Length: 142
Image 1 (cartoon, one colour):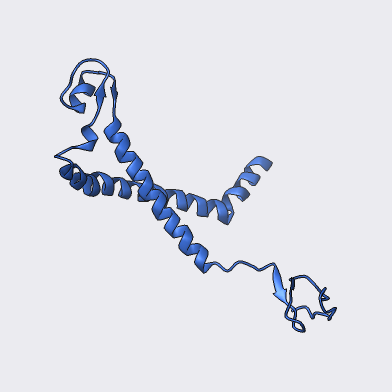
Image 2 (spheres, rainbow, N blue to C red):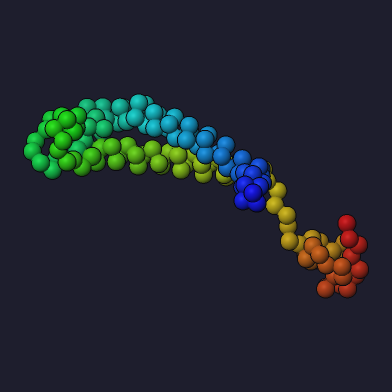
């Protein structure tokens, strides 16, 4: 019974719930970015490069096939480098958006400073100091 109680306590912690929500939202966001890459970004790039469909770029390791679907239907082994290119672009967009989110959050989160100013001599001293090492003034704790 102790294991079940420990697991319940672990699962009920705020951090675990926050992590679960983050994973679920991250998965949904990943689907949105995948759609953005496949349906919005790659078609104009393919058009600009001469009507190239990146999702259909592949190398067949046995025989010649006109489309990836035909190669898969025949069971031929393929190297799907077009899908890989889409996935790399997908990752770059997700990584950039996460960077922007973390960057913005870090701007709003105030970090505790390790130092404070001495009220007598204005020197920088540790937060926990009770006496200034520069002017030896007694520092009142806040």
